[in-house]
Image (cartoon, rainbow, N blue to C red):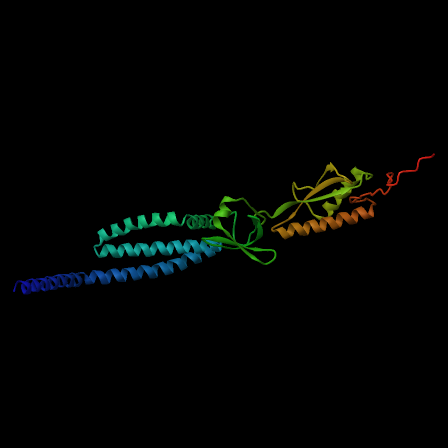
Length: 296
């Protein structure tokens, strides 16, 4: 009898609990529906706000990496705002506090586990807003040289001269120096050469300088510079420096190619010799395997 009574009491307790939950659900159903609607509205707002921000940034001429990161951050921020508003409508302040506390702990654990990934992510954000590095620039960094094709939250993609793509982690770009050819429209190019010891050095200097000035127009305070550097093994070596339009490494190679051809033609027309190392082999051997016979 007692067993049947306890079983009935348990069943009655379960039904009472379910009834109270059902009452709570019915009472909070309007708030739940309203919270759901609010959250869905915030999702649509985030979607269209991201598109609007993308158009504004594109109209201002911002690079692709800045637009992509800015729109993603704005979208996530608006959705999170809608989530917190929905929780507030459901009177789940305690749950909201617990979620924030749990997110902090989980975020700390994830941060410790993904230090390298997070480092690349934050570096990607910095690179996206860095004016010294933009999509389309020609850069040299970490032993690679090429055109920047993409900047994302993990790496930058560089297209090298041989048409191969290289992905370099963002943290490497931040930590290591890089050379950007595109940021300066004009650069100084240097060509090294040498002339024979019998050459008229002052005439060589004058001829080389005039040849470079005729080939590469110098602007403003720019000038062709000619400097002898050393007495080489078979020549007196010099370097000539001049300014020209350079936005990528290929422009440097093209300028050097033109300069070398022009210098060689000018030297040939004026009888100036560009020597090359000559090795002389002496076959004279005074040592003999057979000793000379002694006279008796």
